[in-house]
Structures are given as structure tokens and as C-alpha cells.
Length: 196
Picture 1 (tube, one colour):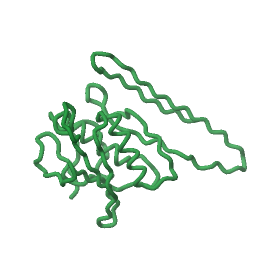
Picture 2: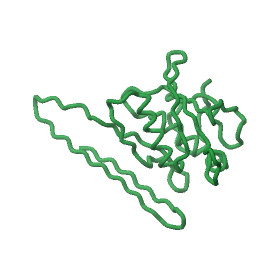
Picture 3: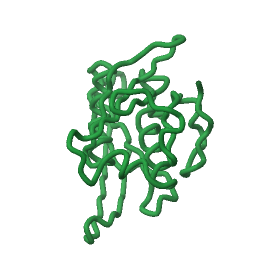
Picture 4: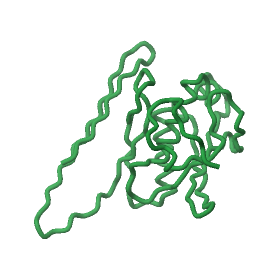
């Protein structure tokens, strides 16, 4: 038996909302019988508590195991966009294979008609906000605890173009991020150096 629980308290428009997700799975095993592989996996969308002090799983995205890796990444991108970034566009363009590594190329696209919520004005502003955005994007796409076939790293584009190291004051998404560089990161600002 396994139980997964996510609790989240958020203040939205002056209204306190409480979100609780509980998943309960019970497996019965008969001696001598093979258990079929699960048809779906739950991929966590990472974030922080409401004070931005502690890493936590905010949501899960249910993704079929049978679909290709690129499609899994696209479904995950849709969940990250909806759950963490007010449906700002996150497009998984392709998987590149530099030096034998699988690197997901992900485009962060601004809305066609800029409104009050955008990548630049809302997600990349302030040192805490910029660090939290970077953590959510990188950790959620790398899925370091997932045991199945997955990408080795991620590279972000902004509006279809390469990101310069000094493009914004509070967030740097210019380099590729790899699974092995994320161990023991738990707070904004504690990021390891990016790998080139």
C-alpha cells in the first residue's frame, strides 16, 4: 500500500484556499502471479510553501507510461504551466543529444498580447521570485526521483531565442541544467553552478 499526499494553502484574491490531494493505492499480490506494470505514472510539479522557505511537491501530473518521452514532457509542461504559472506558454520543442545526453529544449513563450501576468513581469522579477521560478522549472522538468527513462538535462529558450547569462537581474536560465547537479538543493539561492 502506498499513500501520496500534498497539501497546499494559498491566498488567492483575498480568499484562503486549501488544496489537499490524497492518492491511496492498494496492491494485492497473489503468490505465483505476475503483477502487470502500472499504466500511468504520477510526475510531481515542485514548488515552495507559501513563505518560499521549503521545497515541496505542489501537484502531480498523471501521465501514461506508454507514450513517447517527448509527449510525456509536453504533458508535464502543460501541468507546470497551468498549476504554477497561470497557463503561461511552456513549449517542449525537441530533445537534443549532445555528447550522448538527452537534453529537453523548452521554450518559455510570452503571451501575444502582454497583460499583467507574463514571464518577465511576474516570474522573473525579484530575487526570491526569480529563484523560485528557476527551481520550479528545472526541478519539475528533471524529475530526479523518476526511475523510468527520462532526459538527462534541460535547456530553456525565451520567445524562441537563446537566453543570455545577464538577460535578467534575478534569474539565469542561460545554461543547460542536468539531473546530477540538483542534489541537496532546498531553498531559493542555493542552486549549484550550471554545467556548460
